[in-house]
Length: 72
Image (cartoon, rainbow, N blue to C red; front, side):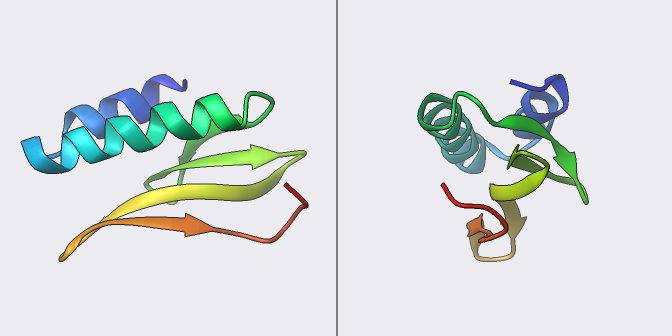
């Protein structure tokens, strides 16, 4: 996992930190060939340079995002 993702999760409030850590672990486990980095200030995973999944902090909570830039 990218060090920026770990730092991003660490900076979240406790209830959001737990959600972010679970999401990051599950995404990493299910997409072992994906590259992870901070993209537009949010953790995002890429396959062949295409963003496929990420998450971001929103006012109501953590938003899980999916892109259809590549088949997965």
